[in-house]
Amino acid sequence: NAGVTQTPKFRVLKTGQSMTLLCAQDMNHEYMYWYRQDPGMGLRLIHYSVGEGTTAKGEVPDGYNVSRLKKQNFLLGLESAAPSQTSVYFCATASLRGPDQPQHFGDGTRLSIL
Amino acid sequence: GQQLNQSPQSMFIQEGEDVSMNCTSSSIFNTWLWYKQDPGEGPVLLIALYKAGELTSNGRLTAQFGITRKDSFLNISASIPSDVGIYFCAGQPFTGNQFYFGTGTSLTVIP
Image 1 (tube, chains in turn brown, red):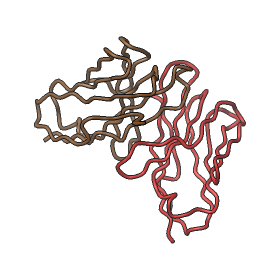
Image 2 (cartoon, one colour; image 1 turned 30 degrees about the horizontal axis):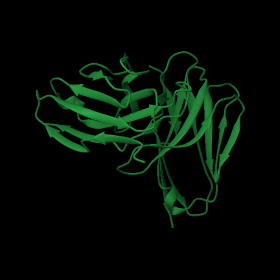
Image 3 (spheres, chains in turn red, brown; image 1 turned 120 degrees about the vertical axis):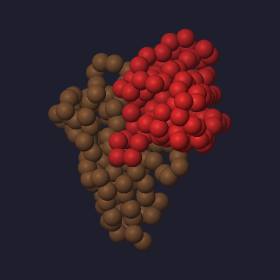
């Protein structure tokens, strides 16, 4: 029972490179979220999805794109990485019952941009 | 975005002591959640609160949804070394699909 799996766990990029972070869930949850966590700032929402084929912007969406082509996967893309995007990225999911339901988190992707 | 103030920022306590932390917002929230995060891992849900005044326990942990809907409290009784970690509050306003997170309280338990 994997729950929420994030791939990769660690990555180092050079400024300007692109990459995609993958979040996969096996709980059949409708809602999926991407957060970034920076020291002293807690978790900030980047983008989220309320169902397959839908996406919406969160608090800090600039520089990121997302896609939810399959219900179980939520992809976060960085088209041209910048040092300010160095962070720990967390994916979370919530059940069909509603967006107020508690979110279940993956273990994070640690991304460094040089 | 919404501002959630979590205090204290850090705590150093002796094993066996009780712990209290709180979270306040500038606006009214519909739902409050409390999470714990261990190093190198994602946050894990401790307690969920859905009604003003609600008091909910999970073992040695007790959380309350403030009556004003602008705050929430978490208490840990008889702390043990495995309580070490960062505790986050999260609140959701009445409209929208988003939770807003506090900046965390780092707890260190000294054996």
